[in-house]
Image (cartoon, rainbow, N blue to C red; front, side, top):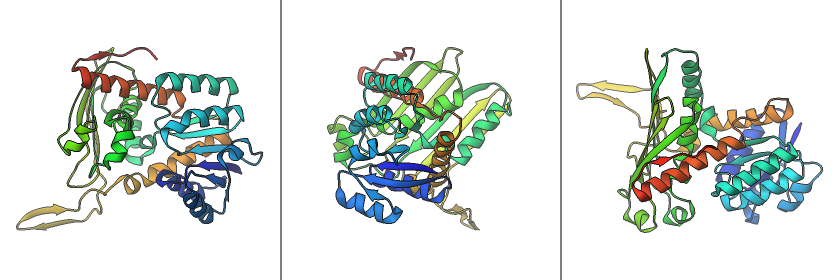
Length: 331
């Protein structure tokens, strides 16, 4: 039985706690949070103990930690957990600083602890099936990847101000998905962005509408578009075009029922937000982490994947600010 310490009892911590509770082979034994009430509520729900974070990191009855705390705490938590010999699951981004991520990579390598980066969309059943069919050669040689991600509404400005920007906070998932599908690193990136949804987002120094074009050394192309607003629900789609055809993963709707009348055809809206849209993905992601730590398989995606996504997010931020394409450095 893998004994897990859960660091951070907010929305994402609660998601991971539900996943662990639904799976065999692991249990949450301790939780911590800067807000005592949040920790106490999740402890009551999971049967875990509320402990100080440092106590969890050094506890003999904790084998692994799940880090769902604010990003600016990740660096210290990763360093401490790795040196204490704990397996680590860390939500994206690992850190806003590429240099800090590289430092974490060094410690993780030195200590040899398992490390998994929380890019849950890789585990979405539809996206995973699309990738499997792509790798099986169903559409021949890959030529063009198109990723669409649009939130139903923007988060509060207080969140925008500390998020690191749309490219680092929102599109970072799509950068990881682009690498996951492409199977080849990108060498060039060009980003554009505007504040069209809420002028306050622009006043905070961010954008709410953005597009990025990426190319690989072989000339393959990926297009990513993001928006903080979609009137019809949480818009999550992927299309991959190849030499012999196309693979496409569509939105998850509230139901599959379709109404047909003399006025036309009508379907339900897309599921409202990430909690319901990616419920199965979060469960599969945690199952993969538990399985890899309990067995011999290396966790995937790993810490290097977190680094590569951050490099792309930083490059997109710079490209949008300068208006120029960016040649990407080797990792």
